[in-house]
Image 1: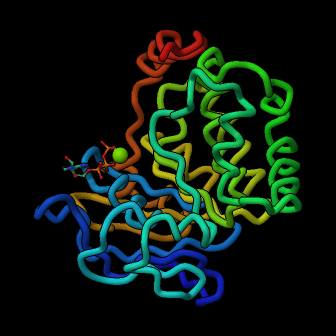
Image 2 (image 1 turned 45 degrees about the horizontal axis):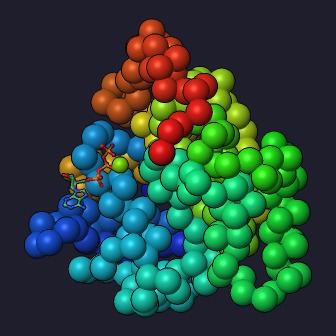
Length: 264
Ligand SMILES: Nc1ncnc2c1ncn2[C@@H]1O[C@H](COP(=O)(O)OP(=O)(O)OP(=O)(O)O)[C@@H](O)[C@H]1O
Ligand SMILES: [Mg+2]
């Protein structure tokens, strides 16, 4: 386990158990997400990755254990308060409001800032710096943007809450290798500016390549964790969790799903 001093941790799960209905899905998970770092959560299908990060984002009740933000116990706080504490969530599937313009999508993100004009301006400035393309498309209907642009917009909208941490579920899903590079490059820029980035990724090797540290989940538990490079070098992690979808299938999926505008 990577050693982190307590104040390096922005967000933390301590022995967290949670699930759906009465079925436990994530069991006894310990995860710490360092400030200004990228942390990748990888693992097999159905391992509980999305469930773990939803727990971190305040979207699921915690059955056992603790969630801490900035050292404060937020385990049983109401879900909407997590955003006010600086934790933004970008769900899987590049969800934007297709019939609304880019600007309207961004305004929805910024509602949390209320009338704080200075914070809004700062959030907008950071967003435009990272996503100049979005800044130039303010009046375009979100549903007419390409898949890659919609994913950028979904991230941009989360940034409009002026968060300290951004949690993303499969940001590369359905994007061509080139667009995956672009999205990962943006996440790297954001972390370099001090944002805490937490992402679940199927493209495990690529995610670990830009991450500082990682967690590997299997059947609801964290089975490996540590600096990203150590996970990449670990023969067991390689054998069990870093098998990539064959290049050919990846390319095929990209041509089918990507460049065309999505229809709502
Ligand atoms: N809303 C839900 N209601 C009931 N069970 C759920 C729900 N969401 C997920 N599960 C179950 O919880 C388990 C873990 O799901 P989760 O989505 O966290 O896995 P994952 O690691 O993100 O998988 P994937 O890589 O396929 O996205 C699975 O068995 C899944 O069927
Ligand atoms: Mg998932």
